[in-house]
Image (cartoon, rainbow, N blue to C red; front, side, top):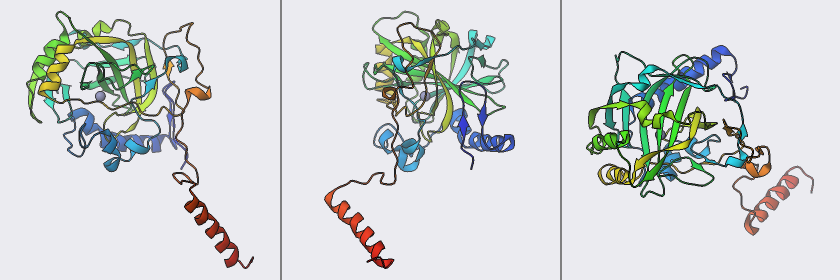
Length: 336
Ligand SMILES: [Zn+2]
């Protein structure tokens, strides 16, 4: 099979040809859309006994994928690139009804079917066409010093909000990620209202309605032109790759006491640690003189090494074993 090439720098995603591409994307769409649209209540994984270290048992890609998310973003290794502006449809500025559901892993907020206005994002070099919001949700940790999935120069934040979008034509998924800075005092926070409602959904399957203005939840999208971009994966099983990630540099703020309510009432934590970046390039949208673009340097890239002897340990016993094979091969071929 011709190698898959995924380019996040423009709209191109090449597979064998257009038909194969469409077929493959439809399969991917069918496999992962239920998780994204409806929220998975799958009990084969969690953030405890069946936590991220165990996911690969049932979902191999979580363990052997080369383009996994989240990652630690090393700012000095990012590459500056010019991006188009994001365009958000008017619905992002309106108070809209969302259904909140405890799916056993987090609280997932979905915009109602049959709603008058669609929530659409375009631009930002995402892909051609429109991306419709499928859900938004929050990740958090055991304490205010952890909880974000992405880290910036190894710095962990108190949480991370994900707004998951889908291009219905190409089946491309794009996630807008906002890091969360935990703060002691904050007035009139849209997230406080969200957490008040979400914290009551203590049992898997519990659901309720919630009215929200997405722009408020996105910190009024201030500095929305300052972000990082890379090619990654879902951060939950099945860890599907080929996701366009946008991680905004300016964090949103949530009160530490609100995050504590989530821990106390719902889940102690629900985040995945950064995964190997491997050879991927992380782009940044803002030119900074102090940041040298040295993404091609070896120090910026880590690669999982796989070789003939991958996983083999060159111990005394294994060296004996290799010699035995060589001697047997020579003997069998009459060379001795
Ligand atoms: Zn997420």
